[in-house]
Image (tube, rainbow over all chains, first blue to last red; front, side, top):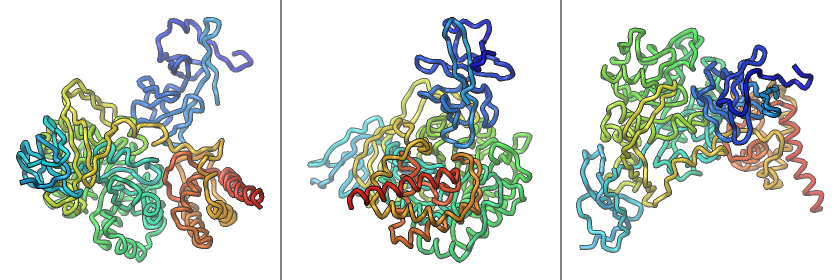
Length: 105
Length: 508
């Protein structure tokens, strides 16, 4: 891991990858969504009832869990319609033809 | 001879199960009332609206919409009149302590007719883990206050709600039944644990306790405490309750409706008497969306349009003893009318467990009239972020705070001093945990300060909400304070109150 906290996801070309993309960074399972022009990462398993967020719906800068509809902000991980539950969220970089992730929180 | 109607809805299929009407008819409105229902009404001088090919029904009645409080909306009309629902019932936001707050903030502020189902805990429904079977939420039950409250507000309070889930046996639901008896209200029972199982499954007790006129909601949920036995058969207590006249309500909710349960129970004869949405912040952006969407799921489940409309008009009104006001197009009644299309197409419906079903028909409200006046339909606007996202403005003081009057800012300053001696724990704004004893103490001090300053309750509540929220949300005063870090609350109150001091200094 670089000192900046960025973790390189090996073997993925960010330009050709299909999103949402499930990746593993260390012990963490992360889903990367395309959100407008950028990429955003969030923990794969919903912190509420452990549903897989892969089928989640991107709503602006938020992701809605497909199971109980809890909505998380990609920038802070805060749940907006059930405050108090927080998801791990990740910055995602596609620079230098590399996919890299870094925890936001 | 000209009848002098104001408006005539021409040529729709009028479905009014209360009057056994299901035929092509006109509906005439005069002075805000239903003036006539019949064929080829004389529309001389009236505005004529073509409803050919549409269903014309009494204004829809939804007995389960979280209009107020921590599950409520900034603009509750967006899940009411704007979606074709002319009357709804708040299912438990207010309790005996918070009822005056609901009354001041929400009751008479809407176009949609709003009535109240009070919740048995003093602040009303005020938390998720709190209502999670934790008997401590009841705190105490001031019976004399309850009697006085219901006597003074009997026109508004239509049922008493209780949750049948518990870590302490079935005592909570029994207390609820006892209180409902004392108050002369129907008991409205939430069945189904909150997505996890508690020490006691109290659903069978709930059905055994319920009497004629009591209601059981979330009838088709699939959480622990289902109406089905493990082998899929409907529990015998459910049939026995129905035989006694207990009413079954859908309460689609956020995790309270399963196609699988419905598909097993319907062929066994368990058909809901009432269809309601349980719209709240969590489900308005799907999978619930609207009462019309829940109605559409019942088309998919095999009910006829007439059966469904009966369950969202006269049955819903009758369940809360409002059939003399709502739920029918009877001549002389307020002209609350909903016009719906049954659209054909390829639609997908989801229950709250992410089970999908394809359907080829859905209800779509196209027009709505309240007291004879037409209001716009918009099925999407309720989903807008600022209508449901109760995100506390932690990084800025809401604009509304700058618009508070001098007395309102003085009140916030006095409130800060009044609660200074109360210590409470909250890491960040959350609906998961609250210390109810502290919340009640903060509630008490909020009201004492409001009375000391002599500020009307509504103005005091608006001042509190303006410290926290960008959108005009409603929330029980003590609970919304107790849910936030103490340091943040004190800083914010100081900022808002000092805004007053600075403005006064500048003026002086």
